[in-house]
Length: 279
Image 1 (cartoon, rainbow, N blue to C red):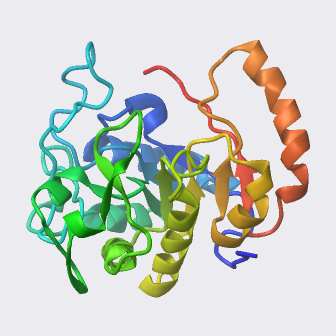
Image 2 (image 1 turned 45 degrees about the vertical axis):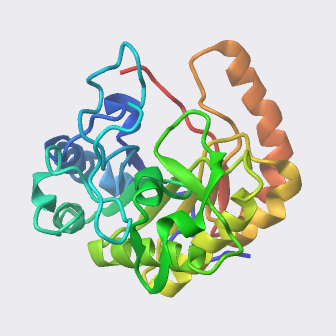
């Protein structure tokens, strides 16, 4: 099983999505880190996680039409790796990425995390961009039929081709350089796409290869109980429910889900639900 010494109990912390949706910026992340360090750290709260679309420009500007604006401008490097949007994360300029922000969070005695989507940016595939560590290009490892139905940013990977594992290795190499401690990977937990199970394994191998301990949390749910052994082997956390809203039927259903999953919570890995709130 995927036991470890850096997250033996369920990680506790703050995720930017529950209040800021896609729009969180550096100042807001720092303010929440400051509050956590001052008021919650002593009780075990330590992770500060920047959620979805930290690489995107103009987020929230068309909320009446789109949750995620299709094919909007994003920040990306020459090796098909997404970078923080400098409009929202000004310390990321000049190739620094999230390192300055991670350093700030670490200076408060906390840990830093980010959200990622399964796969490779569609824009990278369309432009035949390079991949670090291989002569294959993004279009050669992208599977254009493996598409998240609720977010337009990524293609899943052709998991059996050369260059696919190298791509995941390259992004986790970057995250290790930034000082990332926690990865929430989306569009993967409930295996909507055939490749999802293999991509979980590839993420696990990329974390091992990068040399930095990182919690791997899988979203969205509901996780598949018949795949419990797989989650336990390759991840630390997984969602047993989809977004959990404030309604009694959903709350009652949590007792049923907890009964199903209670034998699959142990040292180093855990199942979890995730609440979702309007801004």
